[in-house]
Structure formats: structure tokens, C-alpha cells
Image 1 (cartoon, rainbow, N blue to C red):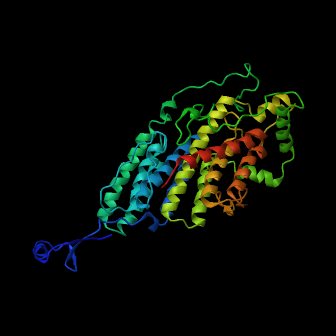
Image 2: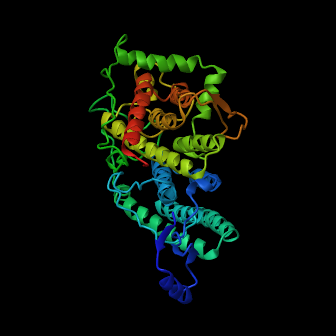
Image 3: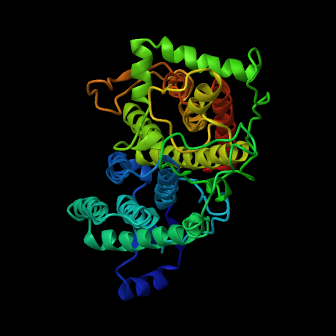
Length: 446
């Protein structure tokens, strides 16, 4: 709002001689508003989606495992929001809300271009979070950044873009400094030897020669929103057993019988959600779904930034919660159980059993968590077509009536794949929903 200050006519005359910068209205000096930056809501979300797709591409090219790339998706989502929230009316930083996240740099009282701020922030964050990245990945990051910034220079004043880039770099560097204390780096060189099954027959063991436990210390790393890594854990509910008729024995039989009676659709579901190496991994599948929904709702950058922050936090915290359960419960996989106790020494699942304990299912936990935050944001009756795999043969597009519909299918795909027991699937979804609720209870945008 413009401010009006009344002055006597003579003083006005003298001031008018000395300055021609102030506007004059009815013998009053009008002090101009401070330079205003265009609001974040004035921008499309196209550039943000391009960054998320690039991260998926890099994860695919470098075969970054799901628990590790969950960190990349998580920080990228947080960084997206943090780079543009100052252009959202009434919005607040996530600094001081997420665990140990400090206050972020503040801008000067100047005009900023939020697309340029975001590009510079994400360039710094994606490059900095990647662990030992390939040069090709860094080139892809630099290319996207350069193209987006040049497009802005072709559109608005270059001085505004340059100022915005500097501010974005400051935010990105602050996020990287914060990330360095989350215990990811400190666990890179730690060794791990699985406790032998001679101590307890329920213990997990690798199911293929040469397999090594993947990310055994993930559950000790800092989350974004969880007060403790085990706060959302769901107990197994019954003890390990090999006696026919017991609950655990029946769980093994369910996997065995399902493998023997798979339908074509169930096999397609198993492969659609497998998200193995050469894809964006299970967390990237949910980022892809988020991209689909952002496009479907034609979200502007302000709303898109919020949803990427929620999804990113949900993905990362889901994996921390799940991996804490996995290595604490340390439960064997169906392949081991069926071969050792159900009289099928040569049995194999439909998909490859990954190198970490069974309980709970990572697909289930991350799907439950993301479905929770997406449902909170968009509602529980959102129909969509998941074209994550480009409708290629064997991975045809699938349609869903809600986010929980997709989450349930993703979870049960691991039963069809033969790599999870029923409890790991059902309890995993419940665990993920609890994680999603913690994210929603922690993050406040206003």
C-alpha cells in the first residue's frame, strides 16, 4: 500500500526542486512501495517437474539403491519449497520445523525471480547430495540449470536473475551443510556382519551368493520429522515358528501357494512396481506419480512446492522408519523360509529378493506414507493413470481410483513377487501411514 505524508506547500515546493523521484498527488509526497517480486503463484510448475524427472533419470543411470536415493528425493523436495516460499503469501520456512534444520539465508529487499532461485538451489542440492556422482550426472544437472537460467535471462532483467541465482546458491549451500550432519556420510565406511542363523533360525541371511546387507545403518540416520526412528513401528504380532498350523507357518504357505497360482495380472503388477535398477527406484515411482498429479491439477509453483516438500519428507522418513524395523527385527525372507521349512529346496520368487531383512516391506511403508500426504493434500477420490514406465510392453500404464488404491497395489505387488510375507505388507502400509501423519503434523507452511 502506498503511504501519503502531508506537508506544507512551501516545503513541498522545495522538495520538488530537490527530487524528482517521489510521486506527487494532491500536494502530498507518495513514497513508492518497495520493489515487489512476482509471487510464486505466478509461475507454472514445469521447471520443478523437470528437476524431479532429472533426479529420476540420474537415479536410473547410476543405479542408486532405494534407501540411498530416498535421501536425494527428500532433500530435493525440501529444497524446492525452501527456495520459493518467500514468494508465497503468509508462508514460513521449514527451518526450525524439521530436525536440526537451521534458519535459512534471508534475501535482500530487492526483486527476485523465484524460478532462478529454485534452479540455483536445486543445482547445489542435487549435486551436493549425490554420493560420488558420475561426471555425466553432474553434466546433466549443469545443463538443466543453465537452460532454465538462460530462459529467465531471455525473459526478465539479467540483474534480477543474477541476484536470484546468488540467493539460490546460498540456500542450497545451507541445505547441504545441514545434510552433512544427518549421519549418512559417517556410515559409509561402517562394516556390518549379519548375525548368523545358528543363533536364531528366524534371522535374515542373504539369499544369493555375493549379496551384502544394504544400508544396515539407515535406521540410525537423522529423519526430517520423526522424533525417533522406531516411533511408527508396528509389531509383527506373532512369533517365528516352523510348526504347521502356527501363524508364521501359514504366512509362509500363503507366499508359496500364491507363487504357484499367480494370474497374468498379478505378474504384471509385480513387475510394474518392482522398480529395479535402471528405474527411479520405488521412491522415484512415487515422485513420478506426484509429477502426474501436479500436471493433472495444473498446480502453480506455490502449491507444487508444498507437495514436493511433503512427499520428499514422507519418502525419506518412510525409509528410515522401515530400515530401523528391518535390521531390528532381522526377519528372514520367504525364499529362505520356504526352502528350509516348506519342503521346496529349489523354490524361487518371481522377482529377485533384495539384500536386506524382510520386516517390514519397504514398498508398503513408502507407499503408505506418500499416499497419506497426497490424500491429505488432494483428497481421497483422485483417479489417475500411472504412466511411470511409459506404457512399454510388460509395464503398461495402470489406473487407480485413489492414492491408497495405488499404495495397496504397490504393497501387494511384493506378495506377487514372492519376497514378502503378509504381515510385512499389511503392517508396512500401516507403518507408512503413521509416518505420513508425522510429516503432516510436523510441517506447517503457514
